[in-house]
Length: 124
Image 1 (cartoon, helix red, strand yellow):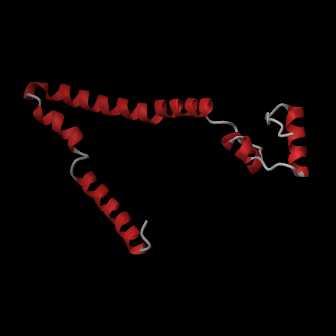
Image 2 (image 1 turned 60 degrees about the vertical axis):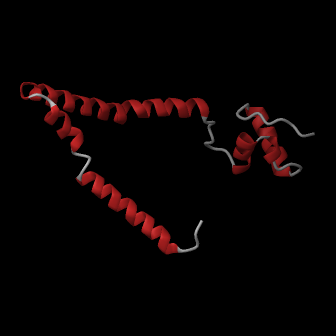
C-alpha cells in the first residue's frame, strides 16, 4: 500500500479512461461483427440471432442471477438481524470471540437459550 494519495487518483482516472476507450471501441463490435462476417443472404438472420442472444443474456443477468444469488445468500449466510455485535461475533468466529463473565453476557445467553433463536454453548 502506498502512502501517496496521487497514486490512488491516477488509478481511478486510468480505470475511467479504460472504460471510456472500451465503450467507444470494442463494445459495439459485439453487435456489428457477427453481422459483418455473415454472408449477405444471412445478414438479417444473423442480426436477429445477435440481438436475441444479447437480450437473452441481459434477461439472465438481470433476473436469473439475482434469484440464484438470493438462494445462495439464504442458504449459506446466517441471519444477523436484531442481534448485537457480540452475538454476531460468536456466530461467525465461534465461542472464542464471546465476551464471558459479564452480567450482560450471562443475561444474553439466558435470553437466547429461552427463545431458541441462538444457541450459544456455555463456558461454565
